[in-house]
Length: 543
Image (cartoon, rainbow, N blue to C red; front, side, top):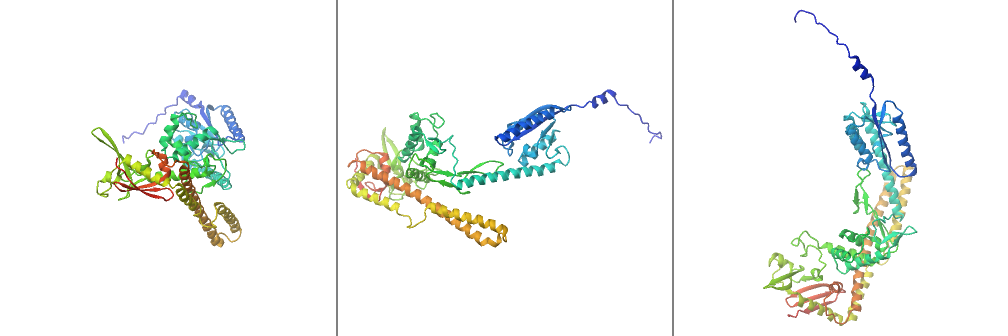
């Protein structure tokens, strides 16, 4: 303390600065509009929103137009799918907008997380968002709680709408109503009656693909064959992909059926498509339209595809059969079996003093030496093929007996089902009746004592439906297996009936159709198992 009293000096305001402060700067105001569908009523609303905000901003003397950002026919559950919305956010970050007008929170975002994230981002930039319907300004202190609640309600509304739409689609599937995407469907176009109509030129390509696959061709070989012949894809070019060929081979529409709900949407927010591997029921509509291939041919392809995939392994050493994948080039790759250890034989090329020699060796001997298989012989390819042809010719000499055996095998395949067993149609009818009973009971329970009063009835109906669905899946699998087996047997009979009495040339396709397995008994003896159950022991003549 100095003992003197403090002196206060007043510094007057600058009149010029006070005058500038009194002149209010115009706010750069933008508006965001969105409609979720392309319906005419929605488009009218969309245009009305644009006109409304243009008029509102331009007639306010304190505002200047910073842009009308409008997304048309786009969902509000994901910001990444709304280009105009993202453009508006970019301009906000560039400090080109001071205020954003939106009709309601549901127009801004139907995803609570997105809604809050973008509002907080704009708040940090000092930019307010005004929701007119809810009368909320995001810069006010209590706005976030209200926005969180309103955003959650908007998201819940979207989820409810999504569930209702999914329920409607699944109900239509149960009633046999189908929806087919023709844009990527090869060999079919929408007919005048709304059902698939065959495109003849492309249908021939589909039959070629199916026949080639059953003849033993790999998908890569089919691809190369189609490209070599200049066959056009569904997009009009000649570059075929293996996935396109696989889709044609696996698509049930080519035999006249439609399988629905192969995939489903995880939720209305992420909209991720998940492959249905049993999480939800699928609905198969048989004989929906004219097929390009027969159902037997289609089922035979599915069985052949499953058989080829069954032998797949990461490497040959880890493959239980001695092979890591299907080999389309040589029929014996999947038929020649070691009589000692049961492993498949593998084709090898030996070169000694410039001379090439093709032999077949046990895969176990090739990979592990004599550790697991000690005495399996190495067989030269030419004498081995001659011995197999000799075995087939020996069976062909008694063609009528062999054809009778194969026909009997076919008959056994056809009659292996239980007598008086229910058909798939009968099961579907019973499931529909139980479903109707469940709905009626549910309605009754809501007005008469509640769920617990009818718990036993609900449990009985649910268990009966589950048992019928399991039985239906078993029947469908059995029908497909029977159909595939019959197709292969009938092909073998056709080859036998059309073939000559003596086969002199090695044909990979013919071997696949006639020969089931060849077991190596010794260095000079094999046992050939023909389709239909006939066994022929044959001596290998050394060249």
